Length: 97
Image (cartoon, rainbow, N blue to C red; front, side, top):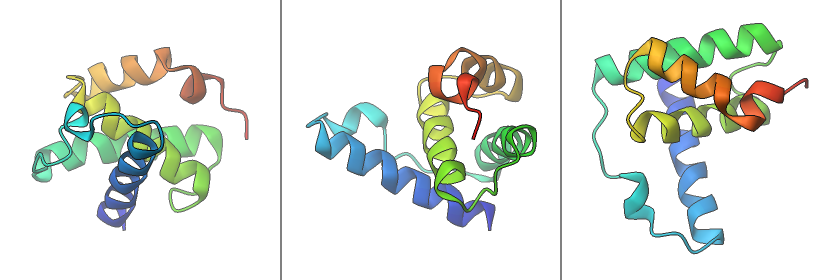
């Protein structure tokens, strides 16, 4: 389930990049995620969803996953680093469903 959500999130990031004509290579979308990487993103997404009372498979949950994938790809590759980056992200930090 979490893997499907992350795949959907990655597709969402690609679509946003295309809408704004951003070079999708900037997002390193061809990067392969192993179980360690997926576990980091999944842990932070799960905590964010619980905190905000959001189902991971909902539109808001998928968008949060897309943002977390992007933040991970920007170099926030540990749970503490990704949580810190998420706390600084406007939409993630101000979300109130």
